[in-house]
Amino acid sequence: MNARPLRPVMSVDEVNSFLDEAFPQLNGANRDYEAISITPGACVVRLHAGYRHLRPGDTVSGPALFTLADIGGYVCVLSHTGPEALSVTTNLNINFMRKATAGPIDGHCRILKLGKSLMVFDIDMRAGAGLTVAHATGTYAIPPKHVVT
Amino acid sequence: MNARPLRPVMSVDEVNSFLDEAFPQLNGANRDYEAISITPGACVVRLHAGYRHLRPGDTVSGPALFTLADIGGYVCVLSHTGPEALSVTTNLNINFMRKATAGPIDGHCRILKLGKSLMVFDIDMRAGAGLTVAHATGTYAIPPKHVVT
Amino acid sequence: MNARPLRPVMSVDEVNSFLDEAFPQLNGANRDYEAISITPGACVVRLHAGYRHLRPGDTVSGPALFTLADIGGYVCVLSHTGPEALSVTTNLNINFMRKATAGPIDGHCRILKLGKSLMVFDIDMRAGAGLTVAHATGTYAIPPKHVVT
Amino acid sequence: MNARPLRPVMSVDEVNSFLDEAFPQLNGANRDYEAISITPGACVVRLHAGYRHLRPGDTVSGPALFTLADIGGYVCVLSHTGPEALSVTTNLNINFMRKATAGPIDGHCRILKLGKSLMVFDIDMRAGAGLTVAHATGTYAIPPKHVVT
Image (cartoon, rainbow over all chains, first blue to last red; front, side, top):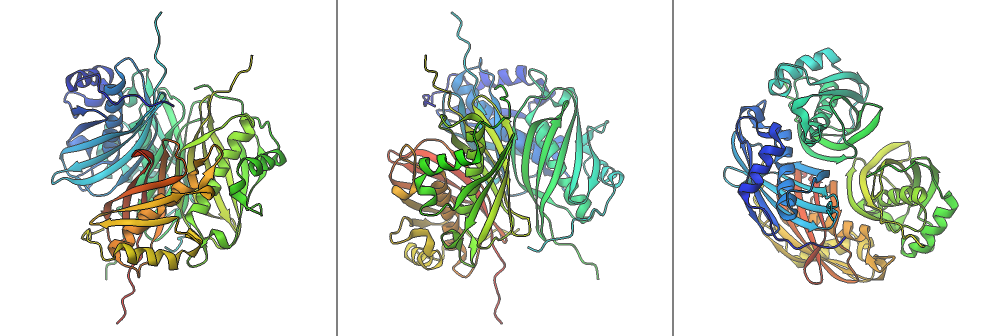
């Protein structure tokens, strides 16, 4: 598994347009989940947590935070390998640390390794005052590129 | 952390009614996620995967399977400790193994440990012909019971 | 990632001899860790927990149980793909549930998926009266076979 | 689960002496594992990887890196809550990213949450040129303090 250079090949706008087209179910009428920044080896993704992401006690649900973590990894792999690759999550481990209420939650995502066939990342999800509400580590499998000859 | 007896105190109907009331966002108009069986130390939960749970390629999304795993653990802790406890997921680790298409996916969930303050479980999620599509392990924190005097 | 048939190609004795040669550091003078049984899609591995595996309170250490889990996965992949493959662990998630004292601990290991390049497994580690002391899920990366022509 | 202040109450020397006494099996004649620095909410631990930590191909073994991760979390909880508490690991998830050879490996460990009964941490394990060889996330259960009256 060789390392790839950590250099983004897509912009924030290109990534968000790609997400809208590829995952119409994700955001519905609004853009609940979106990429905010893309830098070498990292990205920030945001969840605008509203009613449909809440659970009893008006706290953001585990599945909504899992989705944010999954999207963070996806935006990292997409922005660093390009839009033609159909990568899939193979493993995700998430710890829930504090309750979060409605409002923006930012996922700060880092590429820990970008190999030929696997990408490993972690993501720190922070709400309001910057406190970590959840943290996840995951792996995406990157399919071989179709080489057209 | 003492062990509790592995004896259900709620029926499948009671659990499903509780889910409907406590998590109105979960199922919308239909009952996409539901408990199917409850036995000592175990339960089966079902996802009726439809359009809103799919991703490109018409495969069931990671967040939909995460939600099934999370609900499996919740139904285990709820059915074995009773409806008054507000338990929360603290950790969930999920592996995605095969693609699943629209239709029922059954999560076979086992309690690995039911302590005073933590429950550990695993869940094997199977589609169609019985093949495992995803597998998860997780922990719920169980709050102390409010003792009314 | 295609599935491979779940059919062992090595016996318990062959696997133990391979472990002795390939991992001389693992067992020292004794055979602390060994394979006990190999069946289609599964194996049992045993740790004979002695002084060097204990921690304060005379309980079996986390690293000793991690090693048992890791060996369980290794014996599964080795026995089902053959001795020429140099597989490596890419992810392992372990939950510690109960204290274990000196004596045998059996790891019941199942292959959840055996693909072309990845194997996913889980392992239930039981001591004495059969109670689960720890449970793990992990992934091995399987390198492509060297094809000699 | 209330937050505790992130303020160390033990020095590096105090922590290393405590490890020597409490875990005589850990280091044998040498001090293979040791604390290097302790700061508010974080610590650095080092593995001096030698023959007994290697596997075929002269790479540092998974269990040796697991042990480093586990000790990183232990040093964080010990240095921030004091030597009287007997904390235990309840969950550890580790990803192996690159091979490491004999020599020092530094584990940079962060407290993600220090609650009344649980501490969550992550640890980035780096060798030689500073490349991450493994990354882990884990949870320690912190027992209630014995109050002497």
